[in-house]
Length: 102
Image (tube, rainbow, N blue to C red; front, top):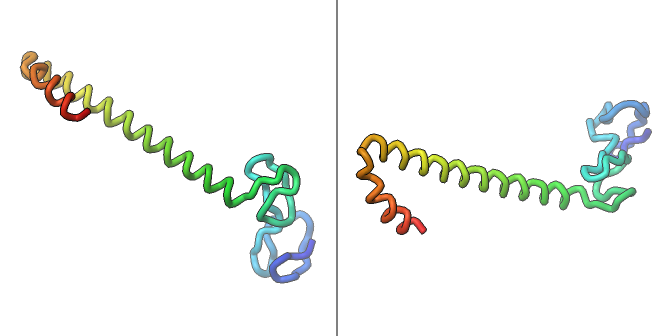
């Protein structure tokens, strides 16, 4: 198999060029099809860069949602602990503080 970057002849079984270490095989992230060049999948037509960018944005949005859920849980736990420690007096302020947050 000939390297598309430097032209070095390589064995068919290796994953990277022995001279320049350029990838010899690219695997489509959507359909797992293996091909000798990157860019766009020959089988399903997915653009590798666009697909990976979309996956990164999706992961970022999941992380944001997870952080927000954790923040809300922490707030509820904090209010319960305050209610126990102040014998319920903090519940009087619970409604006011929650209304201001929204």
